[in-house]
Image (cartoon, rainbow, N blue to C red; front, side, top):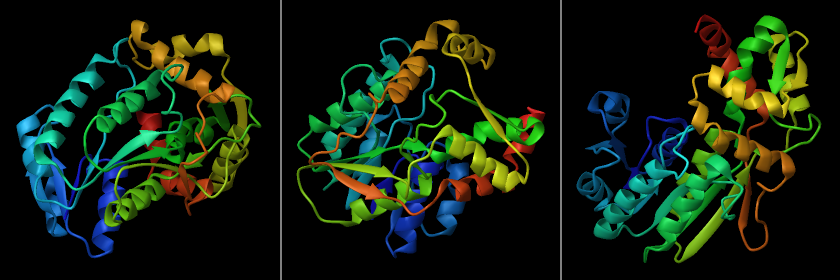
Length: 298
């Protein structure tokens, strides 16, 4: 049996599906029992635990063959990342008590660096917290999520435009579908290994903002023009989306790191996995799911 955090989200859900599809048992860790109904229907064991409750998490992590851990997404953290630090203290205490045979964590491209990461700093802290524990652990450093293109569907559909924070527009970067991340996590949990592993995962090829516009154009069957959002406009745009004025810096720093090439895979002795799912497939899934309609109405 494998305990899965974040099972109601994209990556945790994908990891659990791949485990179940391969005949493995899953313990779904949820904060709200009502959200676990679909997993219970598939035969998953259900554990109720708040992310801030070390005792409940330790119970959920006990008696299993491996644990998948992650931090909840926080796109507007405090400047000192106090929220992530508090959660990591709780997570480490729970893992220290439960002592599972192995831990697989969702990390990020670039997390090997200690500075210049912005939002990715939270994943650097996660890796450090796990590395301080005497447990076998694997850090799955995922590339830019292909599913981030969901933010572009409405504008592309309604106005035939895509406004990109990724610069320059013809520069391809590693991207990956969340299902490929989940598959990698599931297979890593099922393997037998010891010590520390770093697994970098990206899609079958790299994509640029121009490729993103082309993928949406193919699905929408209309032209989609891509433009670069000037950096001096980023903070104002983020504030207009509801981000507090004093918390825009981490997102800007992350984008700067990606655009400069600082946020990149470490390479070297790390393991590297190429996923199967192309960007066009993800774009088609998002449009079919009605993202453009939903965001236009919001």
